[in-house]
Image (cartoon, rainbow, N blue to C red; front, side, top):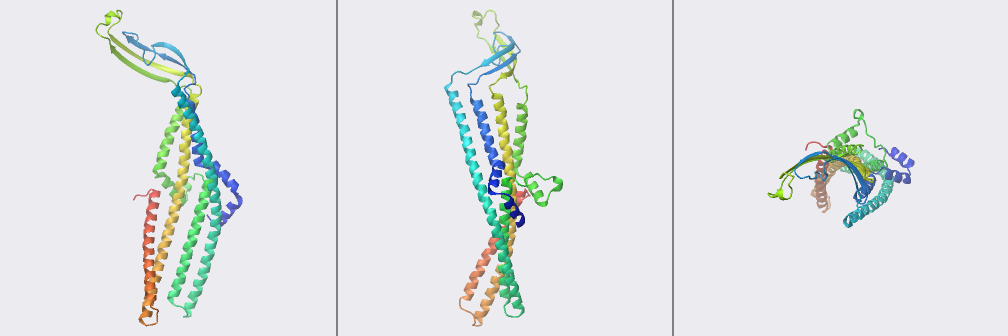
Length: 401
């Protein structure tokens, strides 16, 4: 993002607006709000003292003693009402479920304050990054002016090639610092955009930019997103089944019993073999809000996973941009380390020549050797950084390793 766009966004978006929009668009807060809804639904379901009523039919066939099947005597129709009057264990579970609601609300309020503070910090950091990026660019211009003048002096024979190389190295170092400052600005601006919900629309596949195409491939290959999508599909199916008006409970049972040998003394009119088969179809008539609570809990679980998917997509996009920026930094470090190493080698060669001619100071050669050793370290560190950055980007993109 260009500096002009950053200035425009900061000018049109106040700190209070940024905080309000961040709170409204935060996936984490949506997850916590869904957790509050789930806790309330669970508290309703945990209340065993709510009355309920149902109607059922239990068609069946039996031989031998009259026996209940699935807790019901075979009958054309049954109307049942249930009300728990006293149960200390059920009361304890109800109180525990109610306390979970308060815990979820407290977590939501605490996280809302953290989001507000983090947004304010990010807003201030973007403003500071803008100034730092401009300052770094001015340093590049100044070092470039010095390098141009040094190059002109070499044409007049007034400075050595080594002096020109050192001036060029200063320009390269300043450019790397400017690249770092600009990268920080762009990444922080992207974080702020995603925090306040800016430019977070899904592009069409036919109009993907290269950056959007890389993000799309990364999302397709991300195992966490695949898992979240599968869980979302499952919960959507569960929610669809719970929203149906007709929700009977159907069960079947087959049972066989054998009476003891002297059964005839007690059951003169029955055979010793007792066989029963039956099915029951039960339809709830009144559930004191349990059905609505079940739907609310499933929907809350779905909303949590949807928010988690949005958060993962944003996290993956930021990680991908950070990895790409890190790779660019690693390439710049490698080039700068190579230039610094060449300058250090040339400095050591000149120091050794001067000492050999008796014109140099005694400590120039050891100091040049130390500088060359430091340059060797920078080359090795830059190579390691580059390899790690390349591997990280490959993993995020889902490329074969």
